[in-house]
Length: 194
Image (cartoon, rainbow, N blue to C red):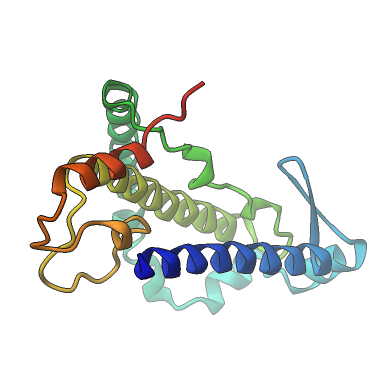
């Protein structure tokens, strides 16, 4: 009970922190109008003044940075295939188990193209990273909901980088009311009733 209370407080504080950080960023640098990002005129001018031209960028970046580019961008195909598999998995399996679907748009966000201080290649790199890392976060949440439904038990060994749902899982080896508590955890990731 005490752990659940602390987790609830932590989640509430994390939510407040995210909002406060976002509010301070929005107030100082930009405003959001739907999906459109708008910067103040002075900020746009400053962005343009620090933007590196493509030739200058090519010369000033370390040449060895360009060597692995075929491998890095070659990963676009497996990433897209992985993305498709995640969409199919969630579309076909989650309704059967009544697990609430993960909104892809909450994890994969493309907004760095609005930054006026990035040249074409920097924007491309930024959006590619946003896609890849957003995809991994999206996959982690899909996996977390699946694990919460089927096996919400912590591991015996310490695990680094656990997902946000892991802390609420049942302790390893604690069989007390296992079926009842598992059912409660399943209900927590279920589709809300209409």
